[in-house]
Length: 432
Ligand SMILES: Cc1cc2nc3c(=O)[nH]c(=O)nc-3n(C[C@H](O)[C@H](O)[C@H](O)COP(=O)(O)OP(=O)(O)OC[C@H]3O[C@@H](n4cnc5c(N)ncnc54)[C@H](O)[C@@H]3O)c2cc1C
Image 1 (cartoon, rainbow, N blue to C red):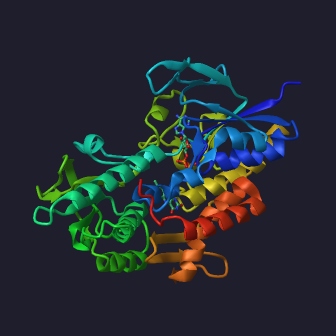
Image 2 (cartoon, rainbow, N blue to C red):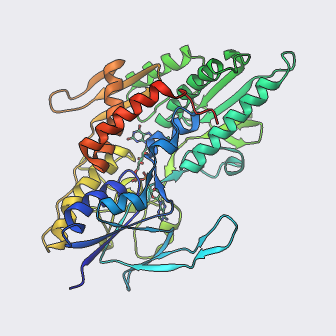
Protein backbone atom coordinates (compact mmCIF):
# COMPACT_ATOMS: atom_id res chain seq x y z
CA UNK A 1 0.00 0.00 0.00
CA UNK A 2 1.31 3.45 -0.91
CA UNK A 3 2.20 5.43 2.18
CA UNK A 4 0.74 8.91 2.78
CA UNK A 5 3.54 11.28 1.70
CA UNK A 6 4.12 14.35 3.92
CA UNK A 7 6.50 16.85 2.36
CA UNK A 8 7.91 19.58 4.64
CA UNK A 9 9.65 22.44 2.84
CA UNK A 10 12.13 24.34 5.05
CA UNK A 11 14.25 22.74 7.75
CA UNK A 12 14.46 25.73 10.09
CA UNK A 13 13.24 26.38 13.63
CA UNK A 14 9.80 24.90 12.85
CA UNK A 15 10.39 22.55 9.90
CA UNK A 16 13.29 20.52 11.26
CA UNK A 17 11.59 19.97 14.63
CA UNK A 18 8.46 18.84 12.78
CA UNK A 19 10.31 16.46 10.43
CA UNK A 20 12.26 14.96 13.35
CA UNK A 21 9.20 14.31 15.47
CA UNK A 22 7.04 13.08 12.59
CA UNK A 23 9.88 10.78 11.59
CA UNK A 24 9.56 9.05 14.97
CA UNK A 25 5.76 9.17 15.18
CA UNK A 26 4.91 8.15 11.60
CA UNK A 27 8.05 7.46 9.53
CA UNK A 28 9.57 4.86 11.83
CA UNK A 29 6.28 2.97 12.10
CA UNK A 30 5.76 3.08 8.31
CA UNK A 31 2.50 4.98 8.75
CA UNK A 32 3.59 7.80 6.47
CA UNK A 33 6.61 8.80 4.43
CA UNK A 34 8.19 12.06 5.63
CA UNK A 35 10.33 14.11 3.23
CA UNK A 36 12.14 17.29 4.25
CA UNK A 37 13.33 19.71 1.56
CA UNK A 38 15.78 22.55 2.18
CA UNK A 39 17.95 24.74 -0.01
CA UNK A 40 20.94 24.08 2.21
CA UNK A 41 22.79 20.99 3.42
CA UNK A 42 22.92 22.04 7.07
CA UNK A 43 20.67 23.54 9.72
CA UNK A 44 21.62 26.25 12.15
CA UNK A 45 19.05 27.77 14.51
CA UNK A 46 18.32 31.22 13.07
CA UNK A 47 18.26 33.13 16.40
CA UNK A 48 22.00 32.35 16.67
CA UNK A 49 22.91 34.22 13.49
CA UNK A 50 23.80 37.55 15.13
CA UNK A 51 26.31 35.61 17.25
CA UNK A 52 27.72 34.02 14.09
CA UNK A 53 28.02 37.52 12.58
CA UNK A 54 29.92 38.88 15.58
CA UNK A 55 32.12 35.78 15.88
CA UNK A 56 30.75 34.84 19.32
CA UNK A 57 29.68 31.51 17.85
CA UNK A 58 31.48 29.22 15.43
CA UNK A 59 28.63 27.87 13.26
CA UNK A 60 30.63 24.81 12.27
CA UNK A 61 30.20 23.56 15.85
CA UNK A 62 26.44 24.00 16.00
CA UNK A 63 25.25 23.13 12.49
CA UNK A 64 23.42 19.90 11.82
CA UNK A 65 23.75 17.90 8.59
CA UNK A 66 20.24 17.30 7.21
CA UNK A 67 21.29 14.00 5.59
CA UNK A 68 22.77 12.63 8.82
CA UNK A 69 19.87 13.88 10.94
CA UNK A 70 17.31 12.39 8.54
CA UNK A 71 19.04 8.99 8.68
CA UNK A 72 18.74 8.76 12.48
CA UNK A 73 15.25 10.25 12.69
CA UNK A 74 13.41 8.18 10.05
CA UNK A 75 12.73 10.78 7.37
CA UNK A 76 14.17 11.48 3.95
CA UNK A 77 16.08 14.64 3.04
CA UNK A 78 16.03 16.23 -0.41
CA UNK A 79 18.30 19.15 -1.24
CA UNK A 80 16.61 21.78 -3.37
CA UNK A 81 14.98 25.17 -3.61
CA UNK A 82 11.20 25.01 -4.00
CA UNK A 83 9.96 27.57 -6.50
CA UNK A 84 6.43 26.46 -7.38
CA UNK A 85 3.52 24.19 -6.48
CA UNK A 86 1.29 22.31 -8.92
CA UNK A 87 -1.83 21.93 -6.81
CA UNK A 88 -3.69 19.87 -9.44
CA UNK A 89 -0.95 17.21 -9.71
CA UNK A 90 0.00 17.66 -6.03
CA UNK A 91 3.68 18.20 -6.74
CA UNK A 92 6.26 20.83 -5.80
CA UNK A 93 8.93 22.05 -8.17
CA UNK A 94 12.57 22.16 -7.08
CA UNK A 95 14.92 24.32 -9.16
CA UNK A 96 17.99 22.82 -10.75
CA UNK A 97 21.03 22.83 -8.48
CA UNK A 98 24.10 24.64 -9.76
CA UNK A 99 27.52 23.69 -8.38
CA UNK A 100 30.10 26.33 -7.31
CA UNK A 101 31.68 26.18 -10.80
CA UNK A 102 28.37 27.14 -12.39
CA UNK A 103 27.58 23.68 -13.83
CA UNK A 104 24.12 22.15 -13.45
CA UNK A 105 24.49 19.45 -10.83
CA UNK A 106 20.86 18.31 -10.72
CA UNK A 107 18.14 19.23 -13.20
CA UNK A 108 14.91 20.80 -11.99
CA UNK A 109 12.65 18.12 -10.52
CA UNK A 110 9.24 17.51 -8.95
CA UNK A 111 8.28 15.85 -5.68
CA UNK A 112 4.79 14.48 -5.11
CA UNK A 113 2.91 15.12 -1.87
CA UNK A 114 -0.32 14.08 -0.21
CA UNK A 115 0.19 16.73 2.46
CA UNK A 116 2.48 19.70 2.00
CA UNK A 117 3.80 21.79 4.92
CA UNK A 118 5.54 25.05 4.09
CA UNK A 119 8.01 26.22 6.73
CA UNK A 120 10.29 28.37 4.57
CA UNK A 121 10.68 31.22 7.06
CA UNK A 122 11.24 34.85 6.15
CA UNK A 123 13.83 37.15 4.63
CA UNK A 124 14.72 40.75 5.50
CA UNK A 125 12.34 43.38 4.14
CA UNK A 126 14.33 46.30 2.73
CA UNK A 127 11.12 48.22 1.89
CA UNK A 128 12.69 49.12 -1.46
CA UNK A 129 15.18 51.52 0.18
CA UNK A 130 17.68 52.62 -2.46
CA UNK A 131 21.07 50.92 -2.11
CA UNK A 132 20.01 48.55 0.70
CA UNK A 133 20.40 45.40 -1.42
CA UNK A 134 23.78 46.50 -2.77
CA UNK A 135 25.45 47.95 0.30
CA UNK A 136 23.81 46.55 3.45
CA UNK A 137 24.60 43.19 5.03
CA UNK A 138 21.67 40.98 6.03
CA UNK A 139 21.37 38.20 8.58
CA UNK A 140 18.90 35.85 6.92
CA UNK A 141 21.18 32.87 6.52
CA UNK A 142 24.42 31.38 7.73
CA UNK A 143 26.18 32.48 4.51
CA UNK A 144 25.16 36.10 5.14
CA UNK A 145 26.17 35.93 8.82
CA UNK A 146 29.57 34.45 7.81
CA UNK A 147 30.00 37.28 5.32
CA UNK A 148 29.30 39.84 8.05
CA UNK A 149 31.85 38.17 10.31
CA UNK A 150 34.54 38.13 7.59
CA UNK A 151 33.89 41.81 6.80
CA UNK A 152 34.18 42.68 10.50
CA UNK A 153 37.44 40.78 11.00
CA UNK A 154 39.08 42.28 7.88
CA UNK A 155 37.94 45.81 8.80
CA UNK A 156 39.53 45.33 12.20
CA UNK A 157 42.76 43.94 10.70
CA UNK A 158 42.92 46.94 8.36
CA UNK A 159 42.45 49.33 11.28
CA UNK A 160 45.05 47.42 13.29
CA UNK A 161 47.64 47.69 10.48
CA UNK A 162 47.22 51.45 10.04
CA UNK A 163 49.75 53.77 11.63
CA UNK A 164 48.57 55.47 14.84
CA UNK A 165 48.39 58.93 13.26
CA UNK A 166 46.25 57.78 10.30
CA UNK A 167 43.97 55.45 12.26
CA UNK A 168 40.32 56.19 11.67
CA UNK A 169 37.29 54.85 13.48
CA UNK A 170 35.17 51.92 12.40
CA UNK A 171 31.55 53.00 11.93
CA UNK A 172 28.88 50.35 12.02
CA UNK A 173 25.27 51.32 11.34
CA UNK A 174 22.48 48.95 12.27
CA UNK A 175 19.18 49.77 10.61
CA UNK A 176 16.28 48.53 12.73
CA UNK A 177 16.15 48.43 16.53
CA UNK A 178 14.16 45.22 16.88
CA UNK A 179 15.55 42.30 18.91
CA UNK A 180 18.04 41.33 16.18
CA UNK A 181 19.46 44.86 15.83
CA UNK A 182 19.98 45.55 19.53
CA UNK A 183 21.35 42.06 20.23
CA UNK A 184 23.79 42.45 17.32
CA UNK A 185 25.01 45.82 18.68
CA UNK A 186 25.79 44.32 22.10
CA UNK A 187 27.55 41.32 20.50
CA UNK A 188 29.71 43.67 18.41
CA UNK A 189 30.81 45.58 21.51
CA UNK A 190 31.73 42.27 23.13
CA UNK A 191 33.64 41.22 19.97
CA UNK A 192 35.67 44.44 20.05
CA UNK A 193 36.68 43.68 23.65
CA UNK A 194 37.65 40.12 22.67
CA UNK A 195 39.62 41.31 19.63
CA UNK A 196 41.56 43.63 21.92
CA UNK A 197 42.17 40.71 24.30
CA UNK A 198 43.51 38.56 21.44
CA UNK A 199 46.05 41.14 20.32
CA UNK A 200 44.29 43.84 18.32
CA UNK A 201 44.64 46.04 21.36
CA UNK A 202 45.90 49.13 19.57
CA UNK A 203 42.36 49.63 18.24
CA UNK A 204 40.81 51.72 21.01
CA UNK A 205 37.24 51.07 22.13
CA UNK A 206 36.23 54.64 21.20
CA UNK A 207 37.27 53.90 17.60
CA UNK A 208 34.30 51.58 17.24
CA UNK A 209 31.17 53.62 16.67
CA UNK A 210 27.90 51.75 16.53
CA UNK A 211 24.72 53.58 15.61
CA UNK A 212 21.29 51.96 15.68
CA UNK A 213 18.72 53.71 13.52
CA UNK A 214 15.03 53.13 14.18
CA UNK A 215 11.96 54.66 12.50
CA UNK A 216 9.69 54.24 15.55
CA UNK A 217 9.86 56.46 18.62
CA UNK A 218 11.49 53.79 20.81
CA UNK A 219 13.92 50.94 20.35
CA UNK A 220 12.29 47.47 20.48
CA UNK A 221 8.98 48.98 19.33
CA UNK A 222 7.19 45.61 19.50
CA UNK A 223 8.02 45.17 23.20
CA UNK A 224 6.95 46.97 26.36
CA UNK A 225 8.24 50.42 27.29
CA UNK A 226 9.91 48.95 30.38
CA UNK A 227 12.04 46.52 28.35
CA UNK A 228 12.79 49.20 25.76
CA UNK A 229 13.98 51.68 28.41
CA UNK A 230 16.07 49.08 30.24
CA UNK A 231 17.81 48.01 27.01
CA UNK A 232 18.29 51.65 26.00
CA UNK A 233 20.04 52.33 29.30
CA UNK A 234 22.41 49.37 28.86
CA UNK A 235 23.24 50.12 25.23
CA UNK A 236 23.90 53.80 25.96
CA UNK A 237 26.25 52.75 28.77
CA UNK A 238 28.08 50.50 26.30
CA UNK A 239 28.59 53.49 24.01
CA UNK A 240 26.02 52.65 21.32
CA UNK A 241 24.35 55.68 19.69
CA UNK A 242 20.58 55.29 19.35
CA UNK A 243 18.63 57.30 16.80
CA UNK A 244 14.87 56.86 17.03
CA UNK A 245 12.20 58.55 14.85
CA UNK A 246 14.79 58.31 12.12
CA UNK A 247 13.89 56.83 8.73
CA UNK A 248 16.57 55.71 6.28
CA UNK A 249 16.16 57.00 2.72
CA UNK A 250 19.26 55.57 1.08
CA UNK A 251 22.18 53.29 1.83
CA UNK A 252 25.49 54.07 0.14
CA UNK A 253 28.85 52.31 0.35
CA UNK A 254 30.28 54.52 3.10
CA UNK A 255 27.23 56.17 4.64
CA UNK A 256 23.50 56.26 5.13
CA UNK A 257 21.18 59.09 4.21
CA UNK A 258 18.10 59.67 6.37
CA UNK A 259 14.75 61.24 5.35
CA UNK A 260 15.91 64.65 6.61
CA UNK A 261 19.09 64.32 4.51
CA UNK A 262 21.43 63.69 7.44
CA UNK A 263 24.49 61.61 6.51
CA UNK A 264 25.57 58.89 8.93
CA UNK A 265 28.99 57.33 8.28
CA UNK A 266 28.88 53.57 7.93
CA UNK A 267 31.81 51.34 6.95
CA UNK A 268 29.51 48.40 7.62
CA UNK A 269 25.71 48.63 7.40
CA UNK A 270 23.58 45.86 8.88
CA UNK A 271 19.95 45.70 7.82
CA UNK A 272 17.72 44.27 10.56
CA UNK A 273 14.49 46.20 9.92
CA UNK A 274 11.48 44.01 9.32
CA UNK A 275 10.83 40.70 7.61
CA UNK A 276 8.69 39.35 4.79
CA UNK A 277 8.02 35.86 3.49
CA UNK A 278 9.89 34.91 0.26
CA UNK A 279 8.51 36.80 -2.78
CA UNK A 280 7.73 33.72 -4.88
CA UNK A 281 4.90 32.74 -2.48
CA UNK A 282 2.77 35.64 -3.69
CA UNK A 283 3.16 34.38 -7.28
CA UNK A 284 1.73 30.94 -6.49
CA UNK A 285 -1.78 31.17 -7.83
CA UNK A 286 -4.71 29.88 -5.79
CA UNK A 287 -2.98 30.40 -2.44
CA UNK A 288 -3.94 33.45 -0.40
CA UNK A 289 -1.09 35.70 0.76
CA UNK A 290 -0.92 39.03 2.61
CA UNK A 291 1.11 42.09 1.65
CA UNK A 292 4.33 40.65 3.07
CA UNK A 293 3.85 37.39 1.11
CA UNK A 294 2.83 35.31 4.14
CA UNK A 295 0.41 32.47 3.42
CA UNK A 296 -2.87 33.08 5.18
CA UNK A 297 -3.81 30.07 7.26
CA UNK A 298 -6.89 28.93 9.18
CA UNK A 299 -6.67 28.11 12.92
CA UNK A 300 -5.83 24.52 11.86
CA UNK A 301 -2.78 25.98 10.02
CA UNK A 302 -4.22 24.81 6.69
CA UNK A 303 -3.96 27.44 3.97
CA UNK A 304 -7.31 29.12 3.33
CA UNK A 305 -7.64 27.85 -0.26
CA UNK A 306 -6.15 24.34 -0.04
CA UNK A 307 -6.68 22.06 2.95
CA UNK A 308 -3.78 19.74 1.95
CA UNK A 309 -1.29 22.60 2.18
CA UNK A 310 -0.24 23.88 5.61
CA UNK A 311 2.07 26.74 6.57
CA UNK A 312 3.93 27.37 9.83
CA UNK A 313 6.46 29.81 11.24
CA UNK A 314 7.47 33.12 9.70
CA UNK A 315 5.95 32.33 6.27
CA UNK A 316 2.44 31.90 7.76
CA UNK A 317 -0.08 34.57 8.68
CA UNK A 318 -2.23 33.18 11.48
CA UNK A 319 -4.64 35.36 13.43
CA UNK A 320 -5.08 34.79 17.15
CA UNK A 321 -8.41 35.05 18.94
CA UNK A 322 -7.43 38.56 20.12
CA UNK A 323 -7.19 39.67 16.49
CA UNK A 324 -3.40 39.98 16.54
CA UNK A 325 -1.26 37.87 14.20
CA UNK A 326 1.03 35.20 15.64
CA UNK A 327 4.45 36.96 15.71
CA UNK A 328 7.35 35.77 13.52
CA UNK A 329 9.35 34.21 16.33
CA UNK A 330 11.09 30.94 17.02
CA UNK A 331 8.72 30.12 19.88
CA UNK A 332 5.74 30.46 17.50
CA UNK A 333 7.39 28.19 14.88
CA UNK A 334 8.14 25.67 17.65
CA UNK A 335 4.56 25.71 18.99
CA UNK A 336 3.08 25.35 15.49
CA UNK A 337 5.43 22.46 14.69
CA UNK A 338 4.38 20.75 17.94
CA UNK A 339 0.73 21.09 17.02
CA UNK A 340 1.27 19.74 13.51
CA UNK A 341 2.90 16.62 14.96
CA UNK A 342 -0.53 15.84 16.45
CA UNK A 343 -2.46 17.13 13.42
CA UNK A 344 -0.55 14.92 10.96
CA UNK A 345 -1.26 11.79 13.01
CA UNK A 346 -4.94 12.73 12.96
CA UNK A 347 -4.93 13.58 9.24
CA UNK A 348 -3.32 10.26 8.28
CA UNK A 349 -6.09 8.52 10.27
CA UNK A 350 -8.84 10.65 8.70
CA UNK A 351 -9.71 12.47 11.95
CA UNK A 352 -10.58 16.15 12.37
CA UNK A 353 -7.78 18.62 13.07
CA UNK A 354 -7.20 20.71 16.22
CA UNK A 355 -6.92 24.51 16.24
CA UNK A 356 -3.70 26.33 17.02
CA UNK A 357 -3.56 28.61 20.08
CA UNK A 358 -0.42 30.68 20.42
CA UNK A 359 0.96 30.99 23.93
CA UNK A 360 3.28 33.95 24.54
CA UNK A 361 5.90 32.94 27.10
CA UNK A 362 7.45 36.41 27.12
CA UNK A 363 10.47 38.02 25.50
CA UNK A 364 14.12 38.05 26.45
CA UNK A 365 16.69 40.37 24.91
CA UNK A 366 20.28 39.23 25.22
CA UNK A 367 22.91 41.95 25.45
CA UNK A 368 25.76 39.49 24.96
CA UNK A 369 27.71 38.78 28.17
CA UNK A 370 26.59 42.11 29.62
CA UNK A 371 22.99 41.36 30.53
CA UNK A 372 19.67 39.78 29.53
CA UNK A 373 16.49 41.84 29.92
CA UNK A 374 12.88 40.82 29.43
CA UNK A 375 9.78 39.30 30.91
CA UNK A 376 8.33 35.84 31.44
CA UNK A 377 4.67 35.01 31.03
CA UNK A 378 3.01 31.98 32.60
CA UNK A 379 -0.24 31.14 34.43
CA UNK A 380 1.42 31.79 37.79
CA UNK A 381 3.28 34.95 36.72
CA UNK A 382 1.29 36.77 34.00
CA UNK A 383 4.09 39.27 33.35
CA UNK A 384 7.23 38.73 35.42
CA UNK A 385 10.04 41.25 34.73
CA UNK A 386 13.37 39.47 34.52
CA UNK A 387 16.95 40.66 34.26
CA UNK A 388 20.47 39.39 34.94
CA UNK A 389 21.67 35.84 35.61
CA UNK A 390 18.24 34.20 35.91
CA UNK A 391 17.10 35.87 32.67
CA UNK A 392 20.28 34.53 31.02
CA UNK A 393 19.46 30.98 32.14
CA UNK A 394 16.01 31.25 30.52
CA UNK A 395 17.50 32.82 27.36
CA UNK A 396 20.07 30.04 26.93
CA UNK A 397 17.40 27.42 27.65
CA UNK A 398 15.47 28.49 24.52
CA UNK A 399 18.22 27.06 22.31
CA UNK A 400 18.63 24.03 24.55
CA UNK A 401 14.91 23.30 24.18
CA UNK A 402 15.32 23.43 20.40
CA UNK A 403 18.21 20.97 20.71
CA UNK A 404 16.09 18.70 22.92
CA UNK A 405 13.36 18.68 20.24
CA UNK A 406 15.96 17.58 17.69
CA UNK A 407 18.28 15.27 19.65
CA UNK A 408 16.46 14.29 22.86
CA UNK A 409 17.48 15.04 26.44
CA UNK A 410 20.49 12.72 26.71
CA UNK A 411 22.29 13.92 23.60
CA UNK A 412 21.55 17.56 24.49
CA UNK A 413 23.20 16.99 27.89
CA UNK A 414 26.30 15.74 26.03
CA UNK A 415 26.21 18.84 23.83
CA UNK A 416 25.98 21.07 26.93
CA UNK A 417 29.07 19.36 28.39
CA UNK A 418 30.88 19.69 25.03
CA UNK A 419 30.08 23.41 24.91
CA UNK A 420 31.19 23.86 28.52
CA UNK A 421 34.56 22.22 27.72
CA UNK A 422 34.93 24.19 24.48
CA UNK A 423 34.28 27.40 26.41
CA UNK A 424 37.32 26.63 28.52
CA UNK A 425 39.67 25.40 25.82
CA UNK A 426 38.91 27.51 22.73
CA UNK A 427 39.12 31.25 22.02
CA UNK A 428 35.96 33.12 23.07
CA UNK A 429 35.73 34.62 19.58
CA UNK A 430 36.01 33.13 16.11
CA UNK A 431 39.10 34.90 14.83
CA UNK A 432 39.30 33.47 11.29
C1 LIG B 1 19.58 37.22 14.04
C2 LIG B 1 18.20 36.74 14.46
C3 LIG B 1 17.91 36.59 15.82
C4 LIG B 1 16.65 36.14 16.22
N1 LIG B 1 16.40 35.97 17.55
C5 LIG B 1 15.22 35.46 17.96
C6 LIG B 1 14.96 35.23 19.34
O1 LIG B 1 15.80 35.52 20.20
N2 LIG B 1 13.75 34.68 19.69
C7 LIG B 1 12.81 34.36 18.76
O2 LIG B 1 11.74 33.87 19.13
N3 LIG B 1 13.02 34.56 17.44
C8 LIG B 1 14.19 35.11 17.02
N4 LIG B 1 14.42 35.33 15.67
C9 LIG B 1 13.36 34.96 14.71
C10 LIG B 1 13.41 33.45 14.44
O3 LIG B 1 14.69 33.09 14.01
C11 LIG B 1 12.38 33.07 13.40
O4 LIG B 1 11.11 33.53 13.82
C12 LIG B 1 12.33 31.55 13.22
O5 LIG B 1 13.59 31.05 12.81
C13 LIG B 1 11.27 31.18 12.19
O6 LIG B 1 11.30 29.80 12.01
P1 LIG B 1 10.83 29.16 10.63
O7 LIG B 1 10.88 27.69 10.81
O8 LIG B 1 9.56 29.79 10.19
O9 LIG B 1 11.92 29.62 9.56
P2 LIG B 1 13.50 29.51 9.57
O10 LIG B 1 14.03 29.09 10.86
O11 LIG B 1 13.99 30.77 8.97
O12 LIG B 1 13.76 28.31 8.52
C14 LIG B 1 13.40 28.42 7.17
C15 LIG B 1 14.10 27.30 6.41
O13 LIG B 1 13.53 27.23 5.11
C16 LIG B 1 14.56 27.06 4.13
N5 LIG B 1 14.03 27.61 2.88
C17 LIG B 1 13.72 28.91 2.63
N6 LIG B 1 13.21 29.02 1.38
C18 LIG B 1 13.19 27.77 0.86
C19 LIG B 1 12.75 27.25 -0.39
N7 LIG B 1 12.23 28.02 -1.33
N8 LIG B 1 12.89 25.91 -0.61
C20 LIG B 1 13.44 25.11 0.35
N9 LIG B 1 13.84 25.56 1.55
C21 LIG B 1 13.71 26.87 1.81
C22 LIG B 1 15.73 27.84 4.73
O14 LIG B 1 16.95 27.38 4.18
C23 LIG B 1 15.59 27.55 6.22
O15 LIG B 1 16.31 26.40 6.58
C24 LIG B 1 15.66 35.81 15.24
C25 LIG B 1 15.96 35.98 13.88
C26 LIG B 1 17.21 36.44 13.49
C27 LIG B 1 17.52 36.61 12.01
